[in-house]
Length: 265
Image (cartoon, rainbow, N blue to C red):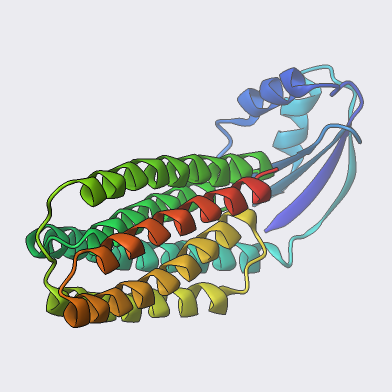
């Protein structure tokens, strides 16, 4: 793999960048393009020589010259790291989707608002991981937009969930099945613990990965809270511990959204 830097004297704005991308689009030898508009430079990662690339660029009459051309030693390593990041995100996405379905079904059956709230939080996490997968290897702006979209989603779920909790406080609801609450929450805790371990193991500093870790850390707290609520439901034979935990869950979801917004600035 070669890395060739070109000086493009008349590349002043994104419109020239788009023209260059279109001009080079059908060259199979090109692996990636890295534009530096302020310095009027283009770095091309490619196989074979750079003559055909230079000819295409020169035909645009943008005052193109070659700065240097060297072996891209770190390129393959960067590609491997991106591949590992994608595999990790697919793993945590699968875990969260599994527990979203499990907690939603068992929450409805057992009449537990805590489990339903946690299932919606799992769904939000799944969408976050999907957005993070979209952002892997992308531009900084795309990664920040991914985090911002995830934050908006969390905020909407927090508001909808809080309204449902208030409705249940005011209405007549059966006491939830505490056994189901405790067992399912223990399983979800194990799943979230595994996700958090995988995410921390990656040691990524990218904003979309940090957002993913914030969501998963919140989930661990929520799982413990639902288990405690199940114990209190058993001791008091009341629906209120479950609804109180449901309220707390959605407050945590809202706080998570605020943290995500902070990362996306």
